[in-house]
Image (cartoon, rainbow, N blue to C red; front, side):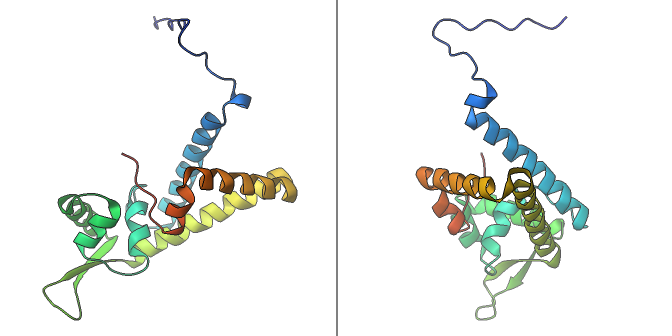
Length: 170
């Protein structure tokens, strides 16, 4: 028999109704969107892609980096970046090559499969944008997009998006 939920005490807040809890609505919508995007990516790309791979892809899109540079941009140790690169190499998402100017330096770049994953994710996000427009109509969709951008700016997250440096979740 399932346990009964303990009623909140006087100092614990009651859960907000969904229409008054934008954080919950955004979290659930973001999770649903992430799941749909990954489903689309996995359908389009033969290599096994994980959601966390996107955090590496965003830094390698402009061009190959050394493991040290990648680690710095990801905000992780060089050992952690090396481990991620080795795993992604095994899955066919990155390739390691010598630097053309100094053969001692190894650079990490994206493979065609990784680029395919990026393109599939972009198509998936465009489909979501189209669904927002079709569901809300052009005016409400524009208001929704502006509100999201205002919230990103208010939290400082807009700069990370512009720099392609959205931090991976812990």
